[in-house]
Amino acid sequence: MTGFEALERILHEGFAAGNPDVVDEVCSPDLVEHQFGLAGRGEEAREHVKAAIRDVHAMMPDIVYTVEDSIVAGDKVWLRGRARGTATGGFFGPPSNAPIDIPLFEVARIENGVIVEHWGCPDRFALLAQTGGLDRLSRV
Picture 1: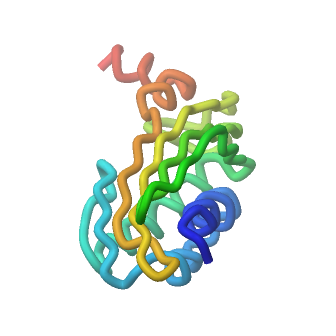
Picture 2 (picture 1 turned 180 degrees about the vertical axis):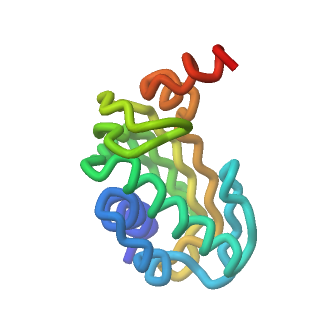
Picture 3 (picture 1 turned 90 degrees about the vertical axis):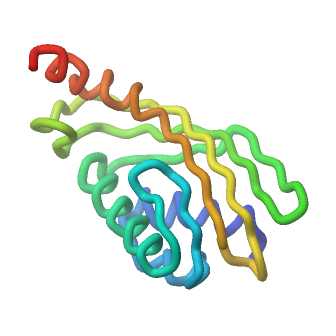
């Protein structure tokens, strides 16, 4: 498996399909996760990613990931894309049923075909705005 394929599998088979078990196949047992809210090392990092897969899929079970641009440079895969779906599950409040379209930026370091280190930057601000979360927070 190439590094690009490992990153694609996490997005499509993991987050889009709601299958946290893919983490065991595409992430190293020594994974270092840098993404805000998921950061950790080893089993802790893997469990954070699995929980995120469950949470994202519960919020948007129809989520679709589109890769718009990618490059492999040495042991790193850089990916820019979009996540689109409908917020039929709650996110900082009740389900909004709003259409969601958020940009993503992912970088993964690959060794022997598995992800050993990951940095992810989903646009959470856009997600909060599109689900009505910002409006609810501004009333607090």
